[in-house]
Length: 267
Image (tube, rainbow, N blue to C red; front, side, top):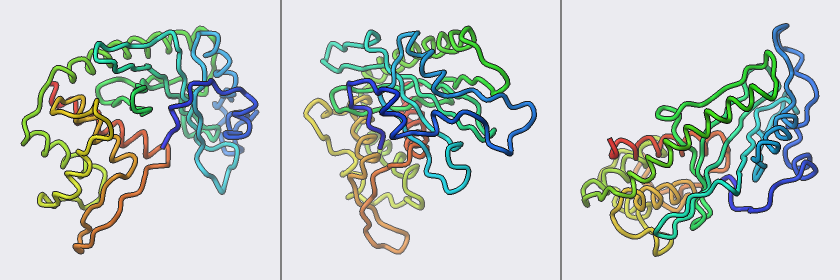
């Protein structure tokens, strides 16, 4: 799982230790003639100029093309914060993914960091557009435009979050929602009667997440699924412990799918 909880911004020296692919100075040998290398550390410096600093970074483990693999950088601006009336403090975040093998553009997505549970959410790209900069040229003005668009999408994100906080789920809806997210997470999970798994993902980890509000239910299920706080029945009827999600690509996909599912109740 991504470590969104660190309030200290990461220095370039720290990033060189944890995510060296950020600092690769050229593209992989198999890139096309149209490919223009854009150093990720250059974008990090430009993001800092815009007030957004790095709180976390990860890279895919690679056996081939080491140094050119896909990586993730999470940015936060501590001046951009949502202080809810219920004490639920939210930091909007910007997530950047990139690689130097010619297979990925710079992709910027919106995210939310929930202070109360030190939990990060990736916002669904079906509802909220992901913004890209192709490896065919880069300048600061282009980045400014992209970040402006991402911040605009954050306004929509905040609006959707506030709507979720106003919706109460019935007991039946709560159970159906938990089952739906389990089906998305666990291959082959279709056992409606696996009450153990359903009850476990609905278990609150703190008093603030109790109740049947959509926001509270979503956060309970999201946290328990990402952390692997449940057991489930396999197709053969054996009960198995779930594992925490540690791969950042899977983390982002599962989070986005869960947020997408929650938004269907808003509509």
